[in-house]
Length: 509
Image (cartoon, rainbow, N blue to C red; front, side, top):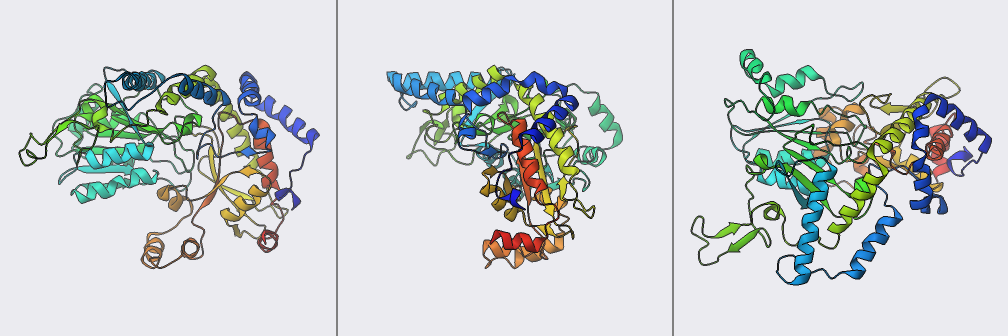
């Protein structure tokens, strides 16, 4: 199984595979500009011999992004925006310019939406969780397929007396069944349901008790499943506010907020264009933003506050209007201009071009991995989620199996990949619902594991659930991925054929 440790360079094999691939996916040839971009802006990958397939974990930055940002910082003086001196005013102008750039990139009307800068997508989700008007009689509905940062909102909702409910996903393809979702979104009598269905966008049926928030990912960070953006209007027609986590979707798909109108959309910019890290945003409809009630105030979120009048309602502090009222302390004002640079870089490349390339490469890789067999006919890989590119992104979760059907721990797979500088990811990927469904983990197993894990090490915890793995290997395709990258992963995966788990354990040392 030498291919697990050393790259096998067979130019004739890859040339043959590429020619066959181009015949099967003719639209790939339209993306040739991305090969030139890869050489010009992401050449460090080939210089270092790195095959990077972790774009859902983090995007890669172009070298020109760094040059432009450094040039800006070198020739300007920026100061804390909470002032009126010249460097502060320059900073404020840049921050507001970047807000406009974000709205333009996502085609969001400035009359309808605001941009609030946060530390990342998690920070945006925490802002909603702590500020949304949960309480007795209110509801928080979310799909089982969600990032932990969306799952975590349930704790804040439950603490305020809200009802929390999950919509399950199917074991077969990790998608949500439409009928159960629709029933949960609209639990009124059928006559009222039809009335709501005839109401235009943005209209809310007034008979619902309490505030209701529905949350789901536009694209799963675990399986790549893309959930319908049509759910937004369906939920809103039944009186729900809708939160869509766009962190995994936005890097390779056009999020058009002129077509789709979520109340809240969360994202991290580094996942789209790599640099800078540490900045995300909440894009919020102004009408929904008005519902949020922050549980505290901080520097920058208030125009003034008082100590002596702290006990007088309405006199203790006066919140800053607009987005700054939701941005705690001083925003990352030296990095925020790099967001503008990054978005312009992506706009120049073209999201449609990125999407086409990712779709083609994902389709080919799904086909090849699904066809890998041991000599006895047993599959080498089990893919979790859709096996084609319909309503799915470039994230593929999988596990490897030996000829006897024994599962190979995803951490072992990652260790082998590291030996040849192939970057993938292993673990549960902060998406417990998709993981538990994909791996058929039961509630009793998970409860038993959790109750006995308080004094466990992390390694012990990973093996506590009836000796089942708690994770999967994940590869994800992005802006700078080439056919050579996915072919190299296929070649790596093929190296597992006809090798027993015991032999692999020995090889791992």
